[in-house]
Image (cartoon, rainbow, N blue to C red; front, top):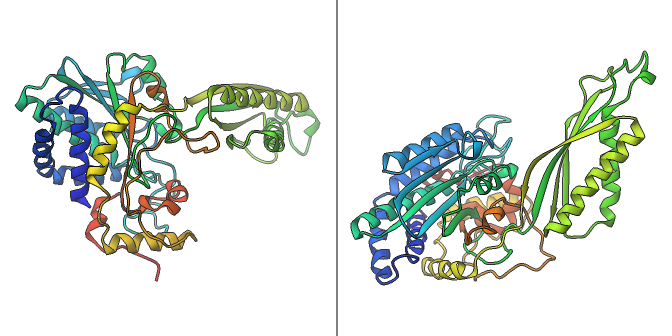
Length: 441
């Protein structure tokens, strides 16, 4: 599996050289393979080290320090705190055209702490965050690819500029629009993104994570009073939250099948004997295109206003994050697909399959193990195929971009990737590759 990941990195790196050095690409690929093989230990260390940090969005302090330290040590120029985001940065090497950007995410998800290589929930620290979506592996791909490219550019006097970007707070869809608005992609010719997946493939148009999203928090303001002694003097902000949620849930029946909407109550008051003067609820509104996303957003405001009218309260709101539906470049995707097919899927060993099937059993899924074939080039998804969201969409509408989806052990199980992505991580910690998986007896 390690050898497969290194070959993948090499071809990912050399796909970018095709933009500026087409004549001897095959020879460069062969040379790159050797350079990637020489960095096996670095790849493993990066995956493990980033796994160990497990930092939530906007808190990727140690992760950023570690990754930028590697890049700076290897001759990249660092600009930190870009776009007003403390954990965001840009690492640059070279000069001139083409300007090639690399991006992958850094953050983890809440309550996903997990011992690696264990096929059931077994957190290292109960309730702690962890890399439940594999964001600990992407920088190993991008950084290693960039280091190999830098060395080849030096040795062969290849002109061009490399830029490495982090996906800060991707799980909150909180930063990439700010990076775009700050002009960080203005001079970039192409962006190559990577993300761990249940498959090995790429696509063009609106494919991966096809839904756009707007993230909104609604804060209701009422009047406190003693809940037993003088409840009539109070105006419950929590009542307003509950009425908004109830109204939204009744309205779901009459919304498009493509929409996805979810909420959590972020503030329900202080204690039962006090009528809550403040309460809040956080919504994600997802749809396939801007007009429908806007429609959900405005409907949310309508529900909030109606709730205040019923409770004699008021509300304010905060836009937390947003993401345009992505649109990936066909020409670049076709080049990338050829490299994917040249690499092929890894040969999973018995331990890989044992872990995958044990995990599928744990989740009550079909126990068919890991995928064996690469995906064909994925065309634009039909409108009836909703999915998750990713704020790379904001980049893809400004710069030609593709997203390489690469497999890693358990995430290559189609039946498990959905529920597992938000539960706990397993084998993305590569040290687990060196021991037998732990399954329920």
